[in-house]
Image (cartoon, helix red, strand yellow):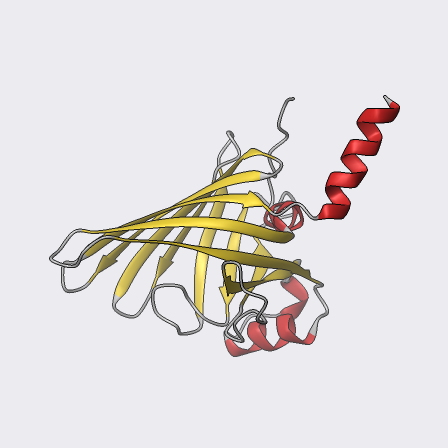
Length: 191
């Protein structure tokens, strides 16, 4: 099956919508031990006229009419029935042009520093999304791409002002519901 990678941020958000099982490894390049863990990532697409999009744009002095939309990213402990953490991040797409292949990603909170931040993004010809972020005291880069429609990879680096660097690798598999499995089974039994 040939993968058709998303080539705009809104296409990326739509392809990412749903629940993902995430396995993460963090490599610290200092005296701190490496970490690993599992969680669920819940992605919901947010409309351009959603109040959260408007508020985030205004907080960064960006015209909300330039926003193409956004997405909400919430994390949940793996195998937990509890609600996702309330600190979900909302990312807003402000594309450079109609192609949507590059632009600004406006966030109500960053990943490295939990402050509002504006990042730059672009899609390579291979479909790999790159996001560069300059925080107040740190720099981060995240790259993400789909291997299949239901499996994606994220790699990020953070360069801290105190000289500490870290690298994170995440593999993410789309959570398939029992209803999805039943629909696939029925399709194959018919075919």
